[in-house]
Image (cartoon, rainbow, N blue to C red; front, side, top):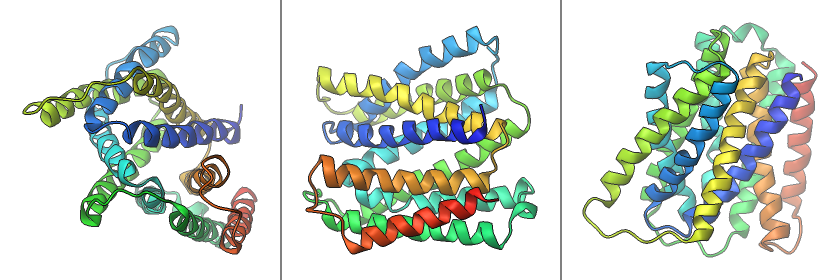
Length: 290
């Protein structure tokens, strides 16, 4: 397996998880229940993976990182519960944080050239164009203060931007996949328990439907697949400057296609969307030629 195949797995899983989070978030008033079940289902999956791969190692630092990942996931659920399309617009900001940290601490600046910078810039511009078009087509956005939505979104972006950089950092330092996944999701599960307690301690919670629980079960499979795919792509030689722009572009583009053709949010593909797809395609080609 090469890093491109591992990245393809991660992209597919990440895109599916974004759609499932939106479906579940719109059904739940207390998003902490979704976070709790999401990581509750993840823990046995990663435990079995670590056990059978003989990588059942406890790393306190990774558990601490997982705790903050749970907080980022909570903010993501809150933001996407308000608007998926508006939240997707900020994925490039998360990627910029990751790329900047990689240049500063992982010595990836040497691998950058005009072709790569041009490809990354085109991908980010394509994300903006597609996200802008998708935002215009979305209907029924909750009338929640934009300041509240912006707080949730920027908080999630900051946490995940740093977490994605640390994921690359730990692969570069030889941490086994099983140990990383166990710490990441074990810490996230502990964090989800505290978030659930904090959000529901003074009020009666809504009951979860079987459909919502099933969605979170399926979601757990995809988010584990996403992180495992990313970890593999970095272990197999993928650089942050290659992995992040490609994943970010498709993560914006796929929800656009889903909204247009599955949820019937638009009557067709606009000129802006065509320009976005062409721009993103050119950017991807320039990145892959490095």
